[in-house]
Every structure is written in structure tokens, then in C-alpha cells.
Amino acid sequence: MNSRKTICLILFLSLSTSVLADEIKRLPSGKPDFSGVYDTGTMTLEERPGVLGELESIYPWVANLLTWAIESFQASNNADSDPNREAPPKGGVGGWENSFGGGNTGGYNSFYADMFSYHSVIDGKIRTSIIYEPENGRRPPAVPGAMRKMGDIYASFIHENTGTATWLEKEGVGPFDGPETLAPSERCLISFASTVPTLPSLYNNYKRIVQTDDHIMILQEMVHDARVIRIDSEHSSSANKKWLGDSIAYWEGDKLFVETKNFNNISGLGGSDENLHVVERFSYDQDGQLLYDFTVNDETVWTAPWSGIYVWDRRDDSKVYEYACHEGNYAMGNVLRGARLLEREWREKEALINEETLEVSAGGSG
Image (cartoon, rainbow, N blue to C red; front, side, top):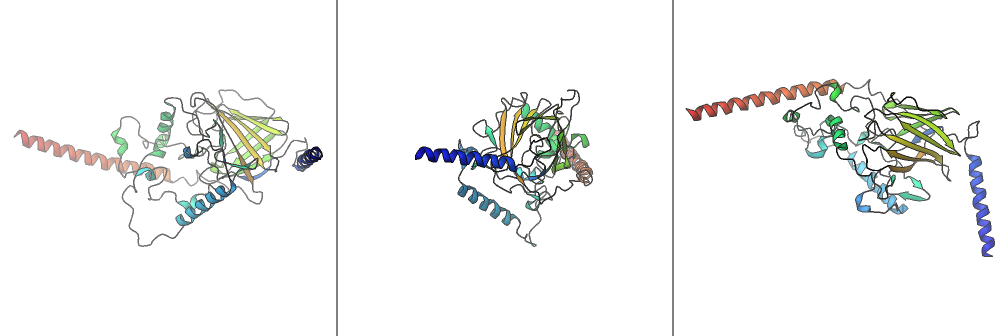
């Protein structure tokens, strides 16, 4: 009797799988068609919080509690401001809140944030991190000196705003010396979120896929980047470097592999350089969800490869709207003008201090 039940169960599962395979939207070639609009704003963090140790997944009720906490936090942040509140201090409130566009002086607030939309369920489990390799769910250690390079490139982005020209305390090029020294994302060259591989961002997490037998196009809402990927093709010359790299794709059964290399020395993946190599895998799971699996390898940045996986939530009733970054980037000129004013104030103050020091010295010698 037990063996009969086992056989029946196997037959049922195999029939269910075959039904799903028949229901998959396919191209004329018979390959799966991933065309559609997706939201990649999963609640699953890229890296597992250290306090969770080796815990790979959580119960649904824990995930629901997390959802409640996030929604409560967002609701409190979206509450009406006190119209009688005092002005923020010059330069902002201090600490980490004064970087990344913060400081309560006109930077982002929660109104613009849209990064948590759904739980990524894989094999019936809610993972505690997108990264699954290494097993601790975190990026491997960086090669010595690699992160310092990233700090130099994004100096203007991570600069702590104190309302003074503190960068003049250091020798060499300053973060606001000119347009070329501003962070690439502030210049609208690339996203401040990773595009290759695709990782959740602060906002603008929608993607649109358009697919044919020869190409697959992934339109990213953030910075309006369009990845046009050639299927069954060869990589272009390694001398032809690109912001998003050079991507080609090939099929293994119903799974589409996308291999990307030939990046510029800067890309949206923080810390990576021109040696970045990314392999992405697109497939439908047993529930008909688009499963996104990727592996990152950059030997001059990280001591080992690392991999991640999460679900792209289908939203075919939505659209991907234009991200008109360059057209609205009037802030760049204002940032540079503001920097020149702060530098003038700094030098005037420095000159006054030097003058007072000379007067004291002259008085003492008399």
C-alpha cells in the first residue's frame, strides 16, 4: 500500500511538472520567453546580517513580522513633519547621516524610497540573504587595497557634509575639484545600484524584458540602462570596454545563461574593476516564478567568487518609466559652485588665523 502511494505521488509530481512546462510562455523556437515587467525590490537583503550566523532561511511568520516592522517604520517616516520645527544645524545632523545625500538638508527622505516590495520565496523557503555562496551569505573578503580605490572613486558620494571644505585638509585631488572628480552615479553615468549583476536598489527596481530568438533586452528603470544581449554569439574585442560590459547568452535546456565581461574600470557593482566577470542564469521555477541566479568573479577585488539568487516578481500590469537623470541633473553645477564658496570661506578663515598667529608672535618677541 505504501509503495502504491509512493508511485502515485511520483506520477502526480511528474504530471504537475509537465503541465507547468506546457504552460510556460515560449518563443517560436520553443525556448522559454521571459518577456514582461518585473519588480526586483525583494525584502531579502543582499548580505546576511552577521547576527543570523549560518541561518539560511526563516519561517513565514518571521518574514511577516519583518514586513510589519518595515511598513511601520516607513509609516512613521512618512508622517507629517512638525511645521514649527527648528532648522537643521549647518551641515546637517552629523555622522553617517551626512553622507549619501543625507544630512536633513535636502537629501533623500522616505518618500523616494521603494526598496521593499515582496518576499523572495525559493523552494518554499524565505532566504536570509540573496548571497548563498560563501555559505555565510556575505561577500568574501576584499583583496588588500581594493576598497580604498572604490573610496577614491566615490569620494564625493560618501563625503561627510560638515558645511566646511574639510577636503582641503588633505593633499591631492579633492572630491569636488571638477565634474570628473564627482562620483560616476552623481554624473548620471551609471547607477548607484548594481546593474550587472542586478541587485535591489533604494528605488526604481522595475525591469522590462523583451526577448527574441536572437537577443534579449533588459531595460533597467534605474538610470534607464538597456542591456542588449546577443544569444549564441561571441564576445567583442577585449579592447572594447563598456559601462555594463559585453554580454552574450546561450541556452542549456530551459535555462538561459548570460556571460558578461569587458567592463570599464568602474561599474555599478561597488568595488569591481575591469576584470569583473559575471554569469547570470534565468529560468522559471516550479511555481512559474522567474528565478535569477548569478555568480561574480573579480580576482583583483575579491579573494573568491560569490553567488546569489532571488526571485524577480512579475508585474505585467505595470510599466517602466523613463529615468531622466541627465535632463534633471542641475545639481552638479550647484554642487561645484557650493564647493568653491566653502573653499573661499575656508581659506579666508585660514588666512585670518595665520594673521592672528603672526600678531601674537610679533607681540611676544617685542
